[in-house]
Length: 98
Image 1 (cartoon, rainbow, N blue to C red):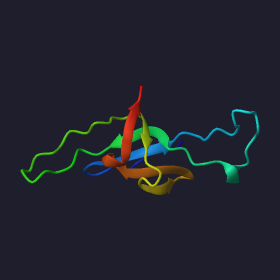
Image 2: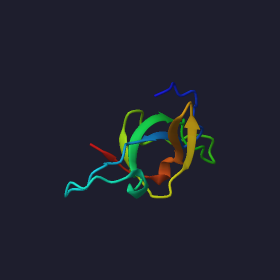
Image 3: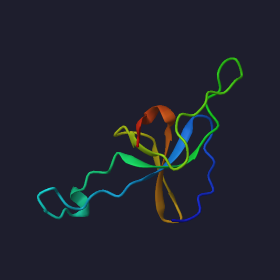
């Protein structure tokens, strides 16, 4: 994985998707075209929080290295040095895996 030189702004989060499982529970190996993109990933960077009308910033609920679940249509995909990442709103994150 290349060094990521992107600092998300506001309540944005950069996530690296976790690789999809290439095999079904019955042992059938799936080709790449049949794999569903995973809806979980690892947080690589977080912004400094959403700006409120009062001028204060909200605290981010996720932090670097959290494993998270997110919505199907979350964020925008980007490529940096051949690696794929997602930039999404913190609101697109459904939960943190523990």
